[in-house]
Image 1 (tube, rainbow, N blue to C red):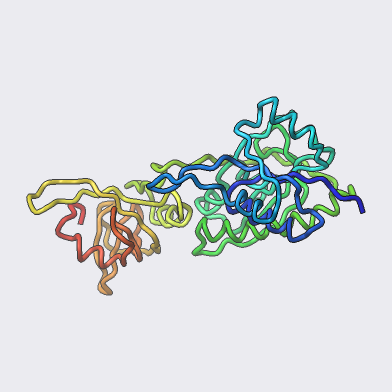
Image 2 (cartoon, rainbow, N blue to C red):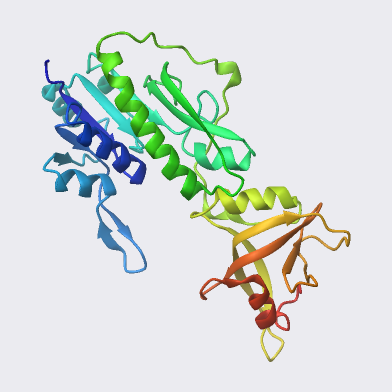
Length: 320
């Protein structure tokens, strides 16, 4: 059996999970890993390598971190390496057509949705925000478009009612990695007929910013509950509150909502105001209902129970 020359491209934990599976298979272990540059992390801005780099180097694989994929030097180096196939999992950069055309078996991408639904950078978050009951992993052949290439294989999985982006991403990483390794033998034997995507059913996702996590008065209780789960761990769902000190001076405070559950409430109050149930649970009123705030994190503080937050801040918040 001829050994395949494989290049792997990936950066975060999703990429690491796929790389781990490829190495474990032995037959499809890549000889070259391409990942993004080390980046500053945390308050001290420590230069930190991506998970794929750390894992690849730990297993004796050559790791390369080109700054730009469109540079002639990058393209020529990949061409000189003569890969049979390139496998991508959350690399994070657009791959130019000059590179797409190099490997005879193409470039296969592990995408964490059931394409054509949720194309783009944030498919897991969007699945939760949309209230989807299922999602999955797709192995697709990369073309010049944004996740528009032919579908090679797919596998679905349910989205649990309490699923967060963090838990669902872990689940889909394993699902996608397993599906990839099962798909590769058939792909190399040319036993798979790629299926074009139905672009009329496509939805597109965007990259989220910090401000996307702010809870607004027009949001329903269901929307807020989905935001909390979809934006865990980042950017987080939060409220902007006004606090008052002993001198009655106002100051803005950010309150991150870590976990909550939507409930129906008979008493209708102004959206984004608070109340407390007979069971001493903190309630946030929304446009059409209420949420029990189970766990919250005030700015600069550690996470705490919703009721503990209420006891400590009820005389300091203008919205309570």
